[in-house]
Image: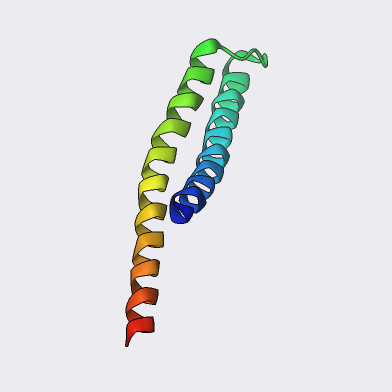
Length: 79
């Protein structure tokens, strides 16, 4: 259970940073085009979708790395 919680925390932090940067870039481009800082609703949905996709990928990756690390530790303790 512990590796899953650790993987979830790391994946959530990575996904949040990437989603915030993506939304900020979208808002910057919107400001450059229109000259106003209105936040259209599709940008928020896009940010949520970006967060979800990155979270899923990072969680799978981090969980795999934690499980691999635990397997190496277990095999080295047995030897």
